[in-house]
Length: 241
Image 1 (cartoon, one colour):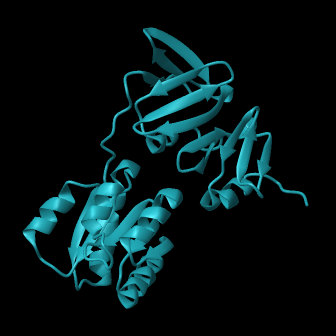
Image 2 (tube, helix red, strand yellow):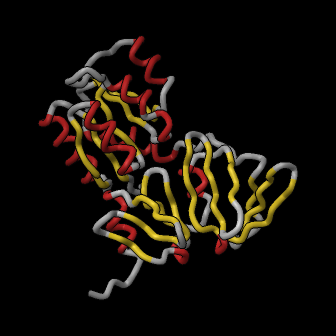
């Protein structure tokens, strides 16, 4: 089974640590644990895990279903866990980015089965009509009735704005209704790297990385560098000190 980067939202620390142990034994990476929905809402969009394991009943004002609604724009699948076998919880969970539903207590085998199902779940999004991938080097973008051929090497950076991505090239910019995650899934990973929850850049276009101010410099653009993305960005380069 392939591995996933997982974030756990669970207010029972003992159970959260058991989940972490089980998941790591199954070969997955735990990026972090949050006990409150408010804390998870701040951390998860910056880390962008592959999956969230989330208890429905959380301490604080926000429960897991509330949190799932606020995280819907991230499109991160959620495996819900709860001690309550309630049909209304189940129906509400299904209206979110859900990837499964487990009622406590459950064992390691049940968790493994749920994670495998989440991992194998097909993506339901489709590429928009305005965007076509012609080859490993370029894309075709429709804008105002005109089809523009854009080489990957000409893209400076991509900025996510709500449900749209703005593709900035060295001469033009194009708005496409697509999530940043879906667009990056279809771009060469060796050429493009995400630097913040709303920004990805063409690696060859990077002129400087300001680690002190958390900025990436491309021409006149000073793009924000998320702390959770800095190490993975620097790891792409041979750094001389």
